Image 1: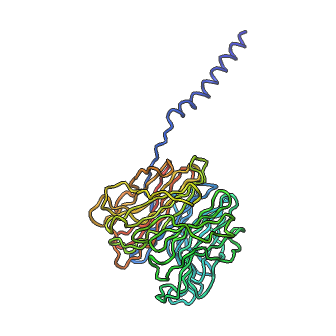
Image 2: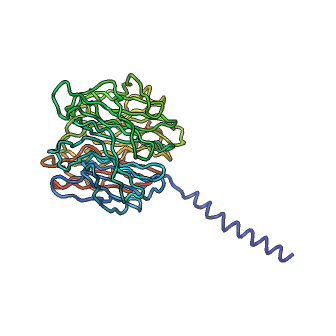
Image 3: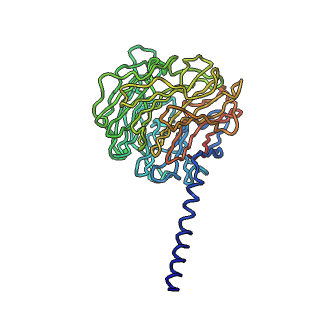
Amino acid sequence: MKSVTTFVICFLAFLLTTCTPKVAQKITTSNTPTFGKNVLIHQGTTGFGPCEPSIYINPKDDNKIVAGSVLNNVYFSDDGGVTWSKDQLESSYGVYGDPVISADSKGNFYYLHLSDPDKKGWSSQKLLDRIVIQKSADGKTWEDGSFMGMHHPKDQDKHWIGIDPKTDALYVTWTEFDKYNSKNAKDNSRILFSKSTDEGATWSEAISINQFDGNCLDDDRTTEGAVPVAGLNGEVYVAWSYDNKIYFDYSKDSGKTWQDEDILAVQQPSGWTFDIPDIGRANGLPILSIDHSQSKHRGTLYLNWTDQRNGENDTDVWLSKSTDKGLTWSKPKRVNDDPAGKQQFFTWMSVDAATGYIYTVFYDRRNHDDSQTDVYLAYSTDGGDTFTNQKISETPFLPTSEGVFFGDYNNISARNGKVRPIWTRCDEGKLSVWTSLIEF
């Protein structure tokens, strides 16, 4: 009997020691997000420096992150963005800015950019003759790359990529100019689409998917800003700006065929080109995303942009959503929650495929009466019905547009509650690229 009693006592002690920590952990767990420190990724020099940053978290390992910036900078972190290494991307097709970073379900990273095959810049006869994509299996070493859309002497610009998480098919859209900056009414712009099903080794013949062509002046009447996303069951969705409107098109068969008539998703009063004091042009081109999570908002499409419908001194961030695969869109919701009369601009959006939470990052001047600029994160946990605004930059910066190219966009990536925005600062004419360590 003594041995049985001893066994029972030991068994009860075992249960207490193994169960008690789990109960305590459950009680103390909190869903409150943490907004960590700002991290400098790249400090530039006076004049032309790093800008137009792009960032993406590896779906297989969210500690591995790749980022890029103009013209050919590439950055890698294997500790969730705490520390970064810097390198220069090279390709036989040339690397000429507009960096776009993404990754497939296998953990392969992709870096898209503009071309400059004869390395002569704006004096080149072949500048922007194609869209180039380079692949990396580890985020540090990069293949020479492949390309799509070479229709020389037409110019290829403003690309973005969407990747199907089920098939790893790569979808790329961009703007083709008959002749960039041409005032000739016979020169037009259009939205092109191409896909790859072999990790970017080969690409389908580029096809035009827009109903209405634009001009070539890189302004409100140019078709521009196309962002593709993969649907839940082989669909491809794309949205872009043209003529003070945001248009939407879709394919039900992985990009083989597209609708004859584009859908007018939302009006964009004042258009997508506008000026912000001490920045210059701060375009409001749309960002399209979709909820791939298992939340109740699964499959919802989200459209994020900025415009000046409330006046040139009151640029705002907007969101519209569709729950019927883009056929109809909700009334635009103002994302920034400050009183009217301040500037919010350069927005970008990411939807976490694990939670369905929506994250937008943008510049914000709500706290200042001059051109001092903060960086804000606005997030929604209820499918875009409400947004919480949080300042994430530790200090404001005071930009100058004199002799400084500030770029056309920032970026953000969210994965498994890890949120990594990326943005450009300007201090005394020197550009730098930053991120912030945010956890949900």
